[in-house]
Image (tube, rainbow, N blue to C red; front, side):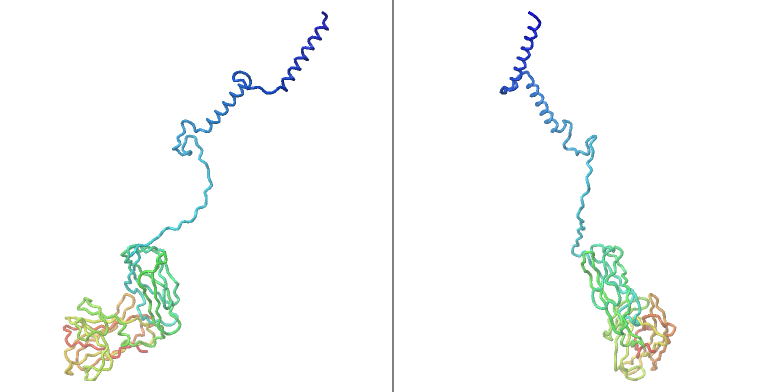
Length: 379
């Protein structure tokens, strides 16, 4: 056979094979074989991928779930942005008896101190913490009632005061312009707004002060008695004239040692002991140029009208701050002759002082019915 015959056979075979292949592409699908072939390889690949996905979703065998991620070796601590937090107010509470206060004394400006109009002054009280809690430094001493007298509404304590301790609290004030009596009340307040303790007060008189009637002011004086160097008893003004502790009172219509009947006089009888004494501390007074202290000192006569055996030392003193200064003293016996006293106070002008009237028994107190007749500050 010639070569053309073989070429024709070869071409026919190629065309026939190509047709078979084209036919296979359009034939219906068949079942996936269980072994061998391309489809089986694909199945293995898919199963392997699923297993890998399953393994990825599990923690490593060495991962300790009780340990925070940040503490795992090589772990990176996640960075988070802090979220704003609500402000929390401390829960401060007080128990019964926690905040308690007791007034101890006036350090400055005793009751009925007299000031000229518009005079600045500082009132200071001493208070004691009698409760079970500290008074914090943000507690306040505040104006509660009456006349404020130019003072601030409140002042802070500025330091802690433990239970049992005392504190001096000062407030700047100004005497009002109008002549009258004034009183302002103050209290303590905790940081929670709890008011506690009794009110304390400042009480003043605003006047031009042309003088001072010590007879009228004697009921406002602080009276005490003792013997020798010992102060023993605080006295109530106006007590029984036979009180053995001593007496300070105003009497009228008694016979004096000169035989005359008395008008209203100040009677001061020392404590009924050897070297007994009695003393009165008067309200503060602002001394002005030209002021004088004037009085007559004497004894009351006995019931039989006779002079008796009175023998005592009369003293006039004044207190300025913590200092007590003797102005004058007079030895007096019951001799029927009262003594006139006239003391020029000009050298003390401008000072605010408290006068003290005192009587000391020279030995026995027998018949020491000592009187001050018309004691006053004159101008």
